[in-house]
Length: 148
Image (tube, rainbow, N blue to C red; front, side, top):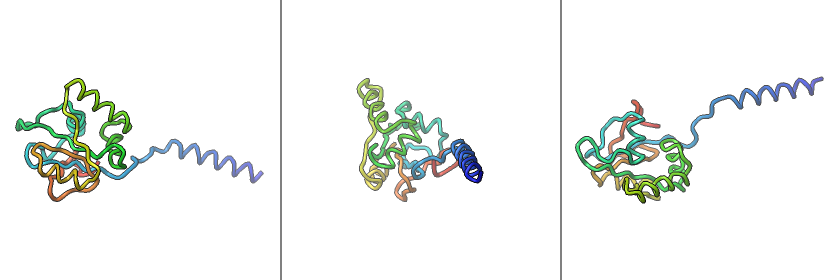
């Protein structure tokens, strides 16, 4: 009889846990931008449109330059999921198709956050994704928050 109660408890516990919303995997993401062109605040729809290559120019007319960590890095995979809602492979295919069709310039991919942050700081209109705010670039507030 005790076995039956234990089994029932574990089955109910398993059902409850399987319906509990999962937290986003991976570390938080921070959007950084160059001081020229990139706005200080964006909503999530604007950010996603920009990062998907749908928006080619900033309001001041400067060109949007996207900087991402390579999709095979943990932060790159997290970016693929959170911002693009794609796997790393799907993201590669997405950008290859856009570039091949001539609809957008592909993002600049980096192996390290330090290299990405340096590129963003030195490139007018550049926007990138890292895990921590960077002193050399401005942090773009998305939906009133520093972290995604």
